[in-house]
Image (cartoon, rainbow, N blue to C red; front, side, top):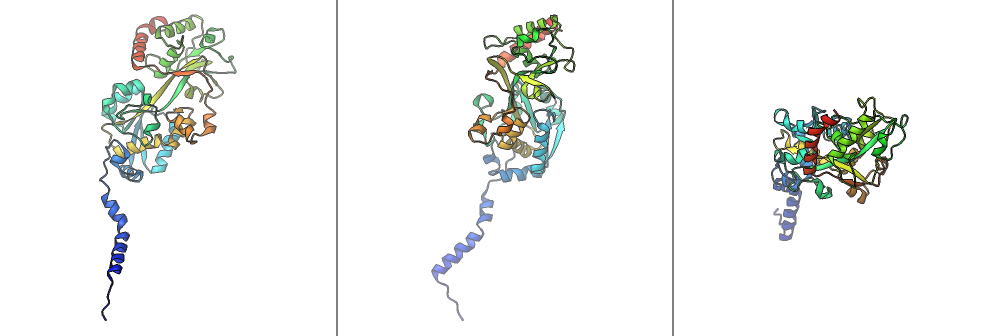
Length: 349
């Protein structure tokens, strides 16, 4: 018996067969993965393909990320568990400058750097703009996408309320009873340097000379502690002071010194897809709120507030201030550091 198929039926049958094979055809049409691309769309087309490429690499190498710094311990563990990628942690206590100096030898995939070090070494980084690029303030990112701020904070006065009264100004620290320390040598440590600069504010402007003179006065008054351990006051970033057990945080004055740490991908990253997935994670709502859990101020904080994705409970724990945040420019920072190199040992020792 001969079976006749109408033209209309033939069209329907052909369309059905094509429809069954459509997903495979669409997959074949996707461009090849480019792990070194400057955006998700350009390199991977979808987050699923980025995750797949990163999992194939299997490892992410980070450097200078202490686990007790802005909640990096939980951030690293969450990333590793969520994507099934091993995170190798190198030299957790290295400074930003040391990260760059050891990069050729250690080959980290990503960096976490102070702004001035990132700007000076931008040629060492691979451009990559995360999906939430537009949420990062313009003054906190490099236009080509070589570096961009992930989190920041305000310089503050951390104090032990069991030993001293709450200071209402930096000048209060010159009064009897206060024992003041910095978190390191201001000629070598970024937080200590910024502590000196924060104490120097006058008329909304910081000046290294005033900062050195202030610490000279602290020393002469007998209020300069021999170490952090013996101090009742530490000038440090608010996210660091907020972690001190039993201590409180004050941010006095109308102007507060702010600063951000920036993220960057090594131009020669051994695991380029994992590096890009790490950046996407850090700048996701989850990643930014994990920084907030560490008392840091996420770079995308304003956007999270507008979209109601900011963890309000965590945000309420940030030290309260009405002060206007001010960031030092790169030339101001360079000039101030040069002054401290010349004068700190003469005046403060």
